[in-house]
Length: 314
Length: 313
Image 1 (tube, rainbow over the protein chains, first blue to last red):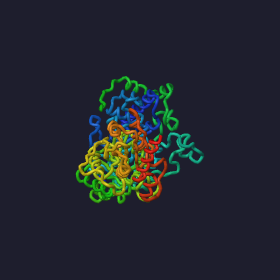
Image 2 (cartoon, one colour):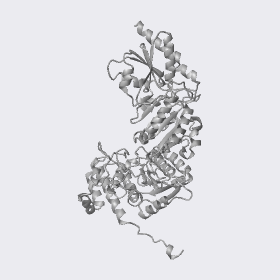
Image 3 (cartoon, each protein chain N blue to C red):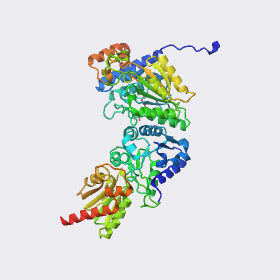
């Protein structure tokens, strides 16, 4: 290898991503607290993955959310909708102050994503285990129409207990959908699950058992014919590299799954690794603690700064 | 008399030729349902999804979202029971442009037993907001409905049968969403039916005529959306309405007619013939039609019985 070919490592963390993710996490806490409903643990665990996707990787244009050649993104773990809405707002798909309508009647921001209401969504989701199938159809359509957009599907590690996911996994490999990437938010917790035990403690996060305890998930996907990339889902450099690899395709034409190890409730010490924060409305005291933790100066500035109303209205 | 599944398979090929957006997704039954004709003609637009109907429906929704017109094919029961949640969320709630075609609907699907018989599909699909529910009587109506569905941007459930069915309409038939068809006039009783059962009801009306009873026959090919005023108008003046369907008497055509006729004005007596809240079984067509009272002579006998009991009281 000549010196010309040496690839210099980029900085480990691009400050803008970390800052956007922090803002998005704050919007989640604020929105759920305001709506007195919603989910926190899952939106926070996937946030670094989502922010990197929307701010660096996804070929989408907030001013033209229906562009037929755009990348497609499906939030299969639809209960994390408030996390997606926060990122879409920060990315300019909707006005930031519209987040206050979350979960309210007539809002475009339903408790789970509703494709008939909000431009920028590519599929309705919420009943778990269905998003990868929709993604398979989008990727099949891209191949058939010789379009080069890429389809990305975010799944929860609890969600992939659903059998329909494995139907989609088979078809994606059979049809060689290298233009399809599944991201598994591997936070190791689900809503309730089972308590941990002496047997599970070594790998468990907190007091509940990993939904896939004792299962080598990477080996399972590999056996089904997928290319597997396993990363730290909070390390921007690893996320970025995984996305670039996924988009670049595969000489064996395998679909890619990124198994991203994350912490449920990441970024909020109260919530991190605590299954009870899957779906919870923070108390006034917890809300204030969250504000302190997520850098109050910056958040105050964000809250008091008039944000441009750039949202694409339907 | 061509088998309805052959009509469907051949019409799909024509839609494929006419419109490059046409794609077909099969649940490993293509050589039964006859979508193998499309697979042969347009292999690149035929997707074998295997024995996995939930994903089949979900992938169809994905294909629709990127501009294709997916026609999904399996036995009725595997859509309306196995894959009903993706049909609900990804197709109906999403107003996806997916055409769900249940082949082998009703009772006459060969000796396969209760596991493969679907006597609830109309009730289930009728209760699904945003879904159009179609049940053609013959070749001309099926072909017209497929032309309509190809052009309509939204979810459609189309219920077809395996075997050949007698012609009720000719090739000049034009399909209109929600319309009802009075295919025979008669003042003494009104018989209402849907799908190929309408042809057996016409035969029953002939038999009633021989007994001096003039029976009107109303065919309802589109259970949803329905022109409810048109249905009421077509049955106006009748004090006895008999619904006949190859389906449970709960929630299908009989339920629909009862809902519509009791919503406005004085309601007639409504007699519902169909599967009486029970399951099917392995049996030949004649056995099935006899057991469930759907053969023409059993329909006419039942109508005569109701009429005589009313005269007596």
